[in-house]
Length: 362
Image 1: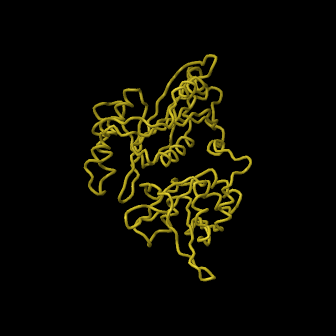
Image 2 (image 1 turned 45 degrees about the horizontal axis):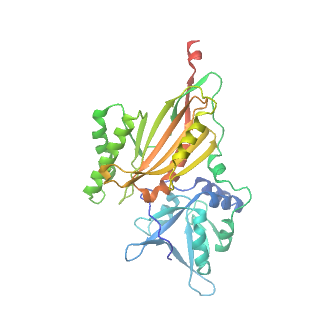
Image 3 (image 1 turned 90 degrees about the vertical axis):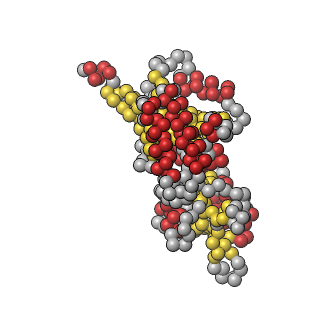
């Protein structure tokens, strides 16, 4: 089934690649919640390769009581449920992440050929519906709010006698840390991390050299700008790897003036926002958040090709400073998929708290 080409994402099967809220809605088999998750979140779409190497959405032949040639569209809540379905049938299932509303053109074009749409056909909670019902569920509803959808979490803030000392991103084992405190180890660490990630993949010496050079330069820049920590995503598949780095910066600014620090920052960024930039503000459980997505001219190590940057500014719970969590990737064509990952990381983060100086001295 042909449609606009989707870009495959190189990542191993994981429950956090996809939509946890769609998975939860499928578990309850609640049509209203499934529809809400589809409108606001992403789905995992399986892909296939045409003889000329192009990607297109994969569909499965379906039995039809009238004997007509019909198809099923299989969609997944995570790359892990896709892998469970593909096990034994395909060596490696390629996939793309797409916002639910992005399915509308496909459903409109091929509805007569689709017998049904099946979510997570291999479980743990398979659900099927007609193409018409899925199309209807994607129609905007009163009360839909994308910002509220991604920021609804239990409140987290300061208690009396506490101060904020850091931000925990809860990065898993598939993130490798770089030591920004030692300029002597940055070059060696960057090479070791990229070499380990690419081990076993088809030889690509130019790509390997570019990734090492990009990561080294990114780490040097982060260290020079006072970055607190930096990590590199090492997750990969059997034949591909993605390059994503995240750096945390800490700015102690003291009491705000007439305008709080976040408002002043937003004013400055808005004045410099380009036509391809996106600036989004939100109120999260951890406090005010400002997300700035942009493309910047890459370093000479990448031959000047653009680099995608997704900056998240979070205001300290006491309002006396800002934390910047900056994601960067040379995969500009996959920036939306990287932003899905970075949104999940930042919204799951928590402030690190300690007794205030007065409490500690008591």
